[in-house]
Length: 341
Ligand code: DAH
Image (cartoon, rainbow, N blue to C red):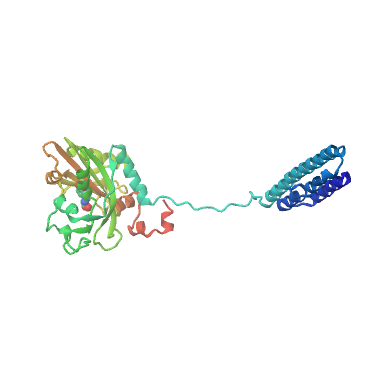
């Protein structure tokens, strides 16, 4: 029996050296150390031995089991190690190979300008609101004091959804004044950027879809001085300190008085050149003191509160800021154009 034990040990150890992977190792374990394995089978015959021999053989059998178990663990470790090494060599990354360049996009020039405008106003305590592009004519016109018969309501100017001209693509961001006054508590300081739509033919300065930023302030004791002070500050932040502006009288149905704000031409400093069409000034935005009818229509007491508002075209502001000659470039999304900013 002793020699049988020795033989099992020897063969097992020899076989172990041949093993290459975990499946083979498991088969080996079952064959030699398993419940139905060779060692167990031999031990079952212990009953045949004499009482003297039994403990000696028992000890020897345990030693063989222990040796085989230890050898198996060692072998397992070395197989795992060599498999890991093989993987590491196989999967080596050659860090000297030049990498692939990932093209990262950047902001569209118009959104660069929008973020600048937002930053300036938010810094002055304004909040930025989004509004619906599909708007009720009631908000786009009536409640802004542009009642039936106003030329901007004409079918040839406006995109309506229905025969009775109730629902439309908003032609300006000014309806956000009404929506702000309806939903906010006083005082109000908001801007609202977004798309607007008009039946315009596409050319270098027109598009049937463009962007505006609306602004509205309603508080106690607001005067035209607040309008001028705030807008002058914005223009200086946008176009540089000392930028000259002028305010011209104008007409908008929802403001009284109304004005347009011009900036002095950056190219010729007011002398006159092709950029400013020899006027020395470039029109920037429309503004005015909110018409009392508009405030009252939103339930605001005009004996206590007053307000000012403005609307600025975003494409034209970006065109001026980046000296872009044609509005179409802003929407065509030609990479060669966009990459310049
Ligand atoms: N909504 C006007 C337009 O589309 C721009 C405008 C002018 C907005 C005066 C205003 C304002 O808020 O006070 O031409």
